[in-house]
Length: 444
Image 1 (cartoon, one colour):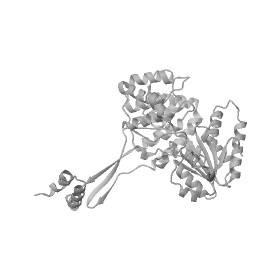
Image 2 (image 1 turned 180 degrees about the vertical axis):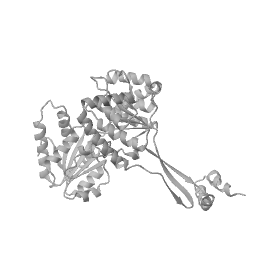
Image 3 (image 1 turned 120 degrees about the horizontal axis):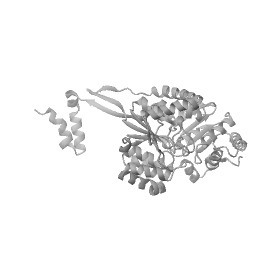
Image 4 (image 1 turned 90 degrees about the vertical axis):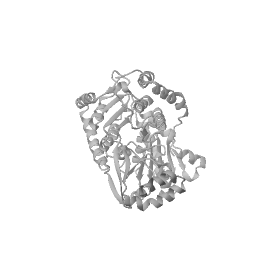
């Protein structure tokens, strides 16, 4: 067995161990809220612009020369990137085309129908203003700009602010990130990160002509997550879902390629020291081979490779192999865990796929690594984590719609329902006004 990758038989786990598994790597926000989020929120409520500048000085080492980058700034950055990163831009443009094509299929037309003599309908109305958080620091995420801005534009959102921290060395957001914001159709970029960026979007900054957002979304660290939860709890704006560490489950049997599985687990571990990378397999031999491949691959890397230590720490903390008695057991465990990413590499892929009920995004087959969806295929990589896939979905065009119902009630339609409305309003003790508001229309 691998000394690095923990291996257990699922049926031999205690109830406490199983509970710890399904708890994911949940973030404890109590201390973060008390020490940072609540005091910072109070400062923003008192004077948002001053609070933003003070927070940038404290947490990011200074205030950028220009906090808001407008369309002209984004266009200029795109021109610079075209001369320095031409090949990279071409790759991202291919991805943008796939993302656009897939998300355009999600447009929602209004509809109406006759129900009991009345015309009822639904309108899908886009949000007015949204703010997308794009992480910085440990890595660059121009792909997240595409994943966040393109669906919002397709839905019809007219005002899209990208929130992302500047590079600590240059003091500005990298051109490749700004180029993607320009290509995707962002309105502006606020050069700020962390909780302060979330509060700026939620409270608005009049001095920067930044109006409060209707909806804030995108991945981020514990401070970003805590700030999003805080502003949603105050009913200042909507948010996508709770954002915990990234995670993947791979369901595999003895037909799976151990090298593929190993590198798919490591690819997720590369994100963050707290990332979750779990193999559910019916094959003990596969589990052993995956562990050996992970150790061999990491040992072969240079010790100064940028993200080697992150991958190693994540595998040590949260990488594991769980041996199960059957693929049906693997499906039950996965559905209960509700992973952000789920890979299926078995001899029964289609059958397993049909049984999955809770997952952010599913990757089917030996040639479907999570990285394909992260960058290129066209599905979205802003996904629910920490078990939120039980009730939440990944970002899509649907994310940005208000669904507003309407009804055109006819006299005949209301008359047909007046007795039922009277009976129901009496049962609820509301006949005096609710019921009578209907009956008065039929009095002489």
